[in-house]
Structure formats: C-alpha cells, structure tokens
Length: 191
Image 1 (cartoon, rainbow, N blue to C red):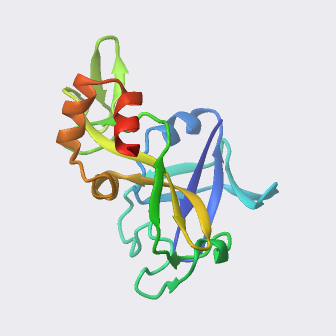
Image 2 (image 1 turned 90 degrees about the vertical axis):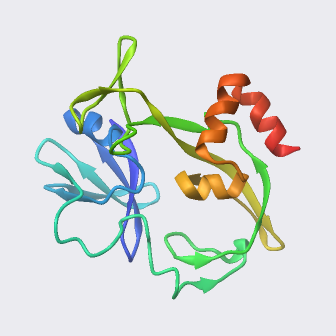
C-alpha cells in the first residue's frame, strides 16, 4: 500500500493505492496532474479518503484538464491568514519566516529530460517514461517549520519553491551533496 495526497480546487484528500497501483503511485512526481478512475471513498480517521483498489487506474497528465492538481484553490483569491487560524483543507496565503529546515534527504533523483522520478536498476538509473537509461538530475524537496505570530506549522517545498526558500539552485545543491553529508548541509542551512 502507498499513501499519498491529491488536490483540486476544492480540497486535499488522503489517498491509498493498493497492490499494483501502489508501485504506480510511487512513480508519480509531486505536482503531476492525474486522473483517477474506478476508485472508491470511505470514512478514514481524518475524514473521507480515496481508495484505489484492483478496479482503479491512474492516468498521468490526462488531456482536457483545466486545473493544476497541486494548486488547491486559486492563490489570487485565497484569504491571508495567520498560521493559528488555518483550517484543514482550505487555501490561504500565509506570511511566515522559516524557523528551521527539518532533517531529510533534500532531493530526489529525476530524469533530466522529462523530470519524472527515476528507478534504480543495479548501478544504473532507468526512466520508465522515456524508456531509457539516464544520468540522474535532482529535484529539491525541503521540509521545514515556518512560523508567524499566530503559530508554527510544517511545510514541504519542491523544485523551484524549495530553491527559492533556501537560496540555492539545484545545481548548487548537487555540488554541495557531492562535498558534504546531508546532515552537515542542513546544519549550515539552519545557522
């Protein structure tokens, strides 16, 4: 089983993919638009959840989709709020400062051509979308705690948003990762 989140303009939902779909869900990069067919809903611990069983299928980047699945709501129309005022599943603008960078990998390996996550095969990497062996590129993923005068919350930023938050490009991070252990880079980012 693989747990993940999906979002549209109205809500963010927890989803669970089972069996063969578990592997397919793991291969989808954050921010990818998907169409899910044949899934069912059920009440979970935190509200309604989407379950992808044997009848379900995931279609990546379907045609005729008008929203970006990771833009839960229109940022132009989102109301500005303090962290302490946030409600589950709402879109809001928050002005906060980075309190600290959390421990984590800081990156994941992607195909330099299509940007999808790569699969490791022995000592090489295969892009299942391009159907070719590739020299991996990286995409940044930064977990952090952000704070305002209303409270603090954990946030995870990907790609360009992560690069902007830490003022390092993915190329600069790649060089740092070759020179230092991840823990040391995080310690430097927090100092």
